[in-house]
Image (tube, rainbow, N blue to C red):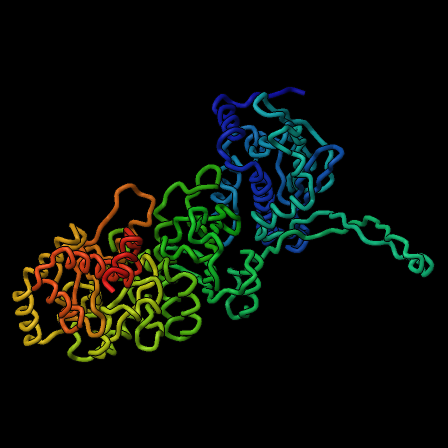
Length: 634
């Protein structure tokens, strides 16, 4: 038997196929099954116009046969088969696609799902096999032929015996090594798992004889003697794939339970999804999609280990398990899949050649997710609030990231806890409920709503009858600063330097008191040695003696968040110490200042500053000094 050599370029490509083109060795089974499906499709296409084929659609199948003793894995189909010339052209010349040629010659529409297009998938077999044998009998031919190869050294073609039309591919697996266990591809459970993962929606049945174990029935005497059970093996033929993708079925024939079962089974979630969308899109991007919003965040969702992405299929064949490009980061919680015939796949069918189609699909997917969330917010508030508790932070990250590019898309999805009953409200609901005289959307930041409610800075705003948004997550204030305004209403922190809530008369009164006590306020500032930008008399305090506010872009809460990060350079807000001019402590300070006791005034300054820090939930630099000052001044 003459051994033929691959052409130089084919030899080089084969070496690349074996060593570098495919990322995972397990892909070989997907490729061979896809080729088998193509072969059946071709014969099925002929059967539509040729009665001599003698096969109905239900007769077609792909068989998988592992043999542990011989270390062989055989993939058999009853498709169109190959002549000697086709074996030479299709397998002797790498990257010569018979499927593509067939599709072109027969002017097939997209509905005829010929999967293979590059003619290289077959050679992925050499990633796991030391020898590949192909026995094929073409439809309409009396002869069968055998193609054999051990890789780059060449191949041979000879006549063979084969009764039925179709193709049989026999892989003699490589020997196991310390790093690679090729015998795993003979394990029936591993084979079933790979078919379920990559080829579950091949539209012809993939069958395998599977061995099971069952207990041998005992006699009454054996049961009474509590004899241990003995087991026997038995075999049965199983169809390993489900064939018809759920997403290609008509929505009218599916129930909620079908979608929920699909989700929990395919995405390994014990909890049913909060919402799902079944998309059939035609136009600038042709694709089917199933999108699911989980009810709970995965344990690693807010960690670096979490991988976003949708499963990407091409004609029902899994191409990528997690295609990150299909989801923006702020919708990374969405699970699901996209199946499209429009994708330009590269030679390995693992990645895309061009991203134009993918970008079009991704844009459409993003719009669908946004619409589904808005529908849930409008029509099922309870579910939306459940979603928000799990994934709201991700939406807020989306507002803040990319310099606020996506804030207009996401702002109507935001929820914040309101001072009005501690309930979650949207920005639209806040603005709609604003009194006519309210100029700003007020917010307060803190570690919890309970802590925020005790902040002295909130007193005046509440007394005016205005709602306050409670920001309790680290990202909250950054997102609010990025938004800047909503429906022409600016956001304003209750700790901002100027709340613009006092009357002109009150402002003039405070200004006069500050001028009158300018020396005292200067002395208090100097005593704090640069810790505050200034000390002023407050227009916002009602019952509390003192509070801290800030001026500039960095708030006190933002300072806490930024300084909790593992960076060397520390950030400091421009703090302002405000003293309540209506409180007894103010009169005490005036008395000390009038008496000229600068040392005692400095001690009061430190004590009041430490008190203000504690109110804000910040650490005081010297707890011992604080404790001693309390004892001394009491």
